[in-house]
Length: 131
Image (cartoon, rainbow, N blue to C red; front, side, top):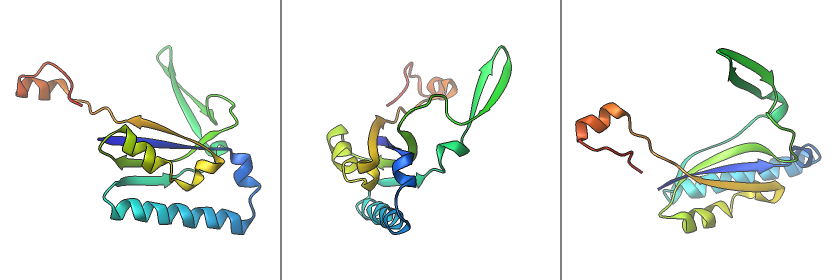
């Protein structure tokens, strides 16, 4: 089963790190990604630019609204993601607990919901989405 691990970080903590501390975190994260890749668990992983570089879209009254930044002010922001393959939630938790930036915030684990287009359901004769 696929799980998305949303990596939340306190960007103020990141900004207050020395260059050496920041690079050590990057190195640890890349080493962890390599270990997940070698074990067959890693699908994709990336860090994100700071939240101040974000753009948010909303559809309101038939129009697209574009705003800078995130929707809400929070102390922790999504700083990256790790998409993994795990046999169950227990294994996903174990794998996510080793993601290095965990110490700067938290990690939200969400199972991927596989969607099936209605035209595919018609072909297979099924009436429900597959998981």
